[in-house]
Length: 293
Image (tube, rainbow, N blue to C red; front, side):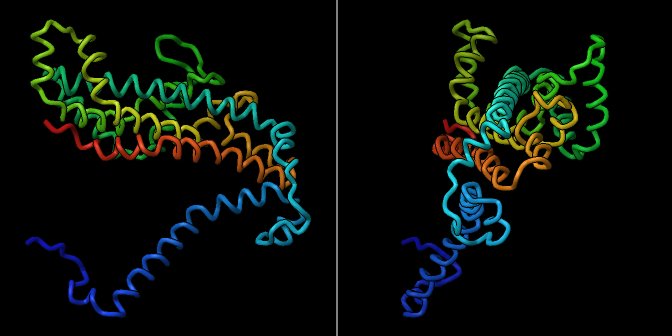
């Protein structure tokens, strides 16, 4: 018989102190994690429907002056949260599309087509992971101000955010690792059946890679949603700024209750996205090690 080995032996588990103490410790740890994870969101919701005076005088009290539900529509209209959320959605969706296009096609070339220069490119892509992002910030910004060859400026356009986010070495390597796990017999069978590279990519590789594609898409959307520094640099026009850039700017002229309502609306959407797609996300993470033959 096989027994699970752990830090507590089977004999010790039958002791009264361990039998009742261990579940109690597990429950306390679970409550602690729950409070640490959900507590800030609940406090943000509470503050979003409170008055500014209540937030400052009694931040942990439950609505001494009553629930102010009008804060949410006021934040939507007066702070123009709707427009900033729309910009954020456009940036996030564009970043997702560009990232998926680059990482899937790049991984397809390196993993499936396997050119002679493939290992050199893979090594170069891997090397970029060891460079801090701040090192490439200035050259990338200068490139956006004046595109090579074209000589045009992408500042104050969404392309300035979409294009740099597409060239993510981590996503390319993760996708390549998944493509490497696809049995070569399937690829060779597709070649024998006369499938070209484009047909193989769209009809074989992508359908088999739906889990990892979903993971990369969700991570890209969430990462783009909370990005602050790069949109601040390339989108100085307030009409184009996402919520992450707009909120600190409007905080100087907005009362704190409306700021909390706006923050809650900004945080709510990524949380809802994760809750809706958590099953697909966790499935994709579990299958990211590859496909079993």
